[in-house]
Length: 293
Ligand code: PRP
Ligand code: ZN
Image 1: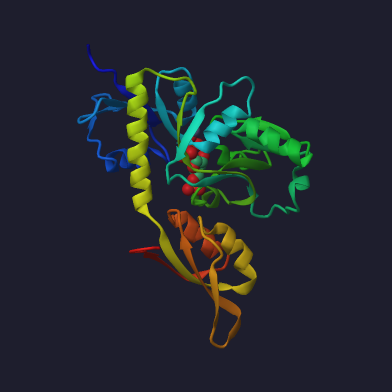
Image 2 (image 1 turned 45 degrees about the horizontal axis):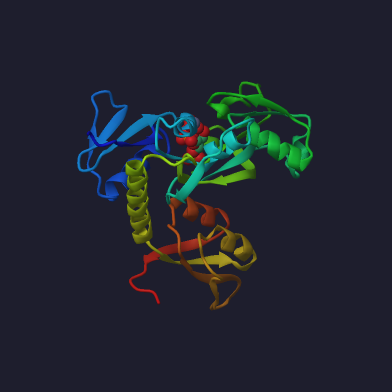
């Protein structure tokens, strides 16, 4: 009897594609690319990877075409906010792909809270999440659903405002847009369908998730130091990933600026550093921690 192979669906191209492959390689799986570029097989374990559009990953997993999927929580949340979608089980966050779904508008847009969106057209590829957000905020606006390239909508006069993923912020900046408000925080996660698969596949799922956990844990905690305006402390504490109360020390001769030290239990991404800078931090250092007790 031939051994059943575990199928994992990953993003074909986009923010998560390379990092998904990196995690799988770091977990000790040797990848061989198929001739078509749309799949990889693992040389040293009965596993195949399928490279598909991220929006299709939940469907593949729900239908049992793939046993596991690596996908942004944003994609899962959009599906879950829609009508009659079978729920998927989130097994673990994967330690990469941090981003936020944000309302964004041209730089000159005067924003005074969600009410400012009232009566406007908002372009998005996340109509379900946007609809939920607008309902929660009690705002009546028109949702313009697009398939992609949402950032060009204001320039093409298709909408006044957009609701899109922001990771580094480069896409918004290149299009003269600025983020106004976060609708959802997201990162890459590992998902499976709720139903139990064959014993073989269940064992494979256990072993793959255990390896991923090991890789992510070893990416380890970091010691983060920076200078920051005292007034930015609440915002900075919020941005620091998995940190307990940071240590705040005065700087000689400065009343308005303090030194902030914190142990971050989660990976510190470039995105995090940029967010810290955006909040007013400077001289940011990220140091490895050798031992912790
Ligand atoms: C998202 C989003 C933007 C980009 C933002 O695309 O649609 O195009 O990332 O990133 P930035 O802030 O670093 O510029 P994603 O890779 O998720 O692909 P998709 O939306 O086309 O599926
Ligand atoms: Zn997508």
